[in-house]
Amino acid sequence: MEHVSTTTLIIILVIMVVVSGYFSASETGMMTLNRYRLRHMAKQGNRAARRVEKLLKHPDQLISLVLIGNNLVNILASALATIVGIRLYGDAGVAIATGILTFVVLLFAEVLPKTYAALYPERIAFPSSLLLRPLQKIMLPLVWILNSLSRILMRMIGIKTNVSISDAMSKEELRTIVNESRSQISRRNQDMLLSVLDLEKVTVDDIMVPRNEIVGIDINDDWKSIIRQLTHSPHGRIVLYRDTLDDAIGMLRLREAYRLMTEKREFTKENLLRASDEIYFVPEGTPLNIQLIKFQRNKKKVGIVVDEYGDIQGLVTVEDILEEIVGDFTTSMSPTLAEEVTPQSDGTVLIEGSANVRELNKAFNWNLPIEGPRTINGMLLEILEDIPKIGTHLRIENYEVEILDVQDNMIKQVKVRPLKSLRPNTD
Image 1 (cartoon, rainbow, N blue to C red):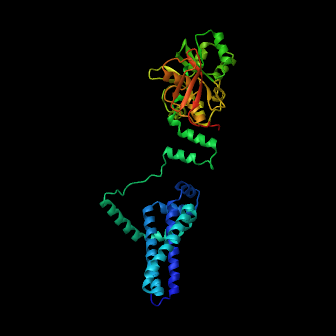
Image 2: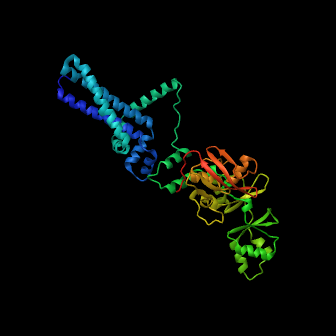
Image 3: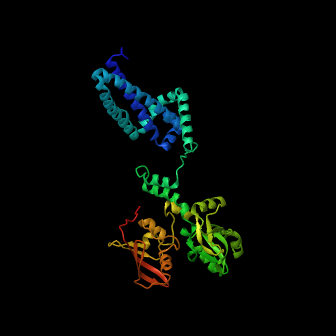
């Protein structure tokens, strides 16, 4: 090195610091890339993304390559800095060179490049892959030896090296991503995606039309009464039964009944029964995601929900499940939540007893208990274990409830006061 000028050594030293910064930025850029975005870009035909994806298939080799290059450059830079320091300042130059080089490496070869790479990983990783790919092939023997030695040492101290890391995301992670994607996804689409993820947590019991609201026709009724019910029914399908709903015998499509009415042959009860479909029974407690698949496989649109004893509990349709995802989109004879809820200026909310607890929680971001009865009336009767008197007060978790109206052994209206500030979801 004696015949090399000090100026040349300083120039080489600067180049070494730049190369060290390149390796540092490359490592950070590669490791902070969004893998799912990278995979998408690779599938779209982006060549740089494909190169990076190949490098990241073996992260241990990539890290070893970067560390070998970075350490070689830093060691060489340290040696050159020592020579330059001695030439300029004598024996004191060793300490001076060490201090200056440490500061320069930290700032220009570590902090600045790594920070920039963390902020803009694609700008660093994509062009960097042009050099790292051939370097990986050239340095493969050395990288293999280094990785083999590290694996042996890890096994000696009891660390497993054959652990496979999956890129698969859990539902909770997906939920977090959807919640944090407001700039890319509209609020309505966010709600739809979250509803899909929540389908397995909701059962047919939560959304079914309860038994007492099922519209059916008693086939033993007077024929004129049956015709009148058919012509005035607002529903597309009606349950046919004998005397009581428990003796359900078929599911009639109104369109099929109208077809029979327009035919020239005689329209009778026998023809009506023959035109009805076999009832599709659904066990209570079935998660919505499973029931939606069953509806599709069995080519059914409506099912009767039964308990473990075979007793009819309610009715569920494909539309009911879809509305859990996209919101109400069909005309319903039942009152909407907006018609059952009246927010007051003092922060309280007047609620009809028939209001659905799950819908209330969803609309107001509340946490009323949903295990058990579906309605406010059912929930309160289960908690109180008695028919309450008007004016009864009780506290349910963080909510103060006052009974305002009781009729026919049912709670008709209540006033709920959240004990902490909660905003309703108006979207």
